Image (tube, rainbow over all chains, first blue to last red; front, side, top):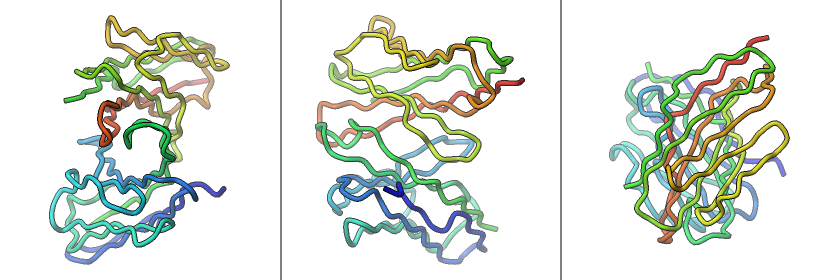
Length: 118
Length: 116
């Protein structure tokens, strides 16, 4: 398996522009997670899906952020409009289900998208 | 609320030295999982180990070993005979398993620099 695939790997945009990050999870995995990593706040969970259904989006910072998972093999994280403080590395991760909760199992991370908003 | 503390922000060692990365956690649950992840300079997080709260046996995998002590709420990670390739940021993480909605809480990470 190719692992979790994210695109683009790097994104530079200007404040106010729309940004869309993409993720393809590992086939057969039940959970998909979106994380954000910054120096100040570390790794933060933004949202996660179970079988394509959003379960917990309490980590999404503002209404400017939205995430979708239209099918089992694709998810997007959209920021509209983007702001300089959104600059971070965004990770997508997936995991199978063999525990009780979403966080019980090892998560497989993608390479991340480094977003810079000027 | 669950919490993970990695008090060591950065550790520098010389190759072949042993090094221990500390992890202290807080949880009110009796059932939980602990993890270690490695983030090398390439940026991708790599899973190292998962341990449930009922299994306090220490684990060894090659040069890596983990010491889980519930009495002190610690899950420390030791690298024996460190190598330059071990240079990375290491994250400890906690998941509380008593509900179907548990998620991972990560510590801030410890940056390990191994010099030749």
